[in-house]
Amino acid sequence: SLADHRKQKILMEGAEGLQLSCDMGWTAEALANILKNCSEHTPEGGCIRIHVTQNTIYTRILIDDEGPGLTSEECRRIFERFYKGTGGDRDSAGVGLALAKSLTESQNGELRAENRKEGGARFLMTFYQ
Image 1 (tube, rainbow, N blue to C red):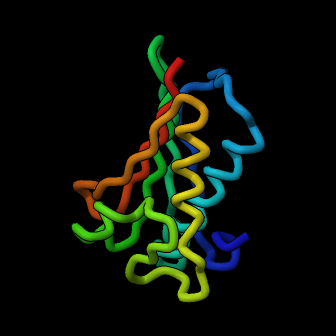
Image 2: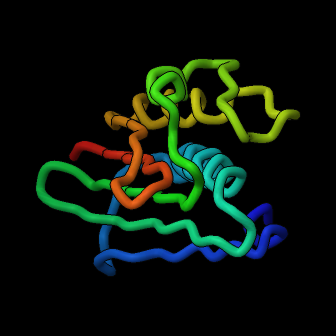
């Protein structure tokens, strides 16, 4: 709903018919927290892209935003509980991304963040088979 309010598009790309063995409720919560963060940093009318790939070792979900990207401090601390980076919702408690990381790791997964070459941030959520 935040993306709708800000007139942002969310595009999903990737192979169809992929299957992921995970707790759908917790994974949806983790993805929602990442998407909220991306929406807060993507300009109004911008686009958030989700790309899914799978091989015999893992399923990876990439979430790209069109925001300013991450500072070096944000790259180091973005998943710390109560950490609030620059430009986000000032009313945020700073727990959404920490929770997303914890939920992903509890399912034999990994969550990382980096800057995209084209600008903006990228979240890499990987679930190992």
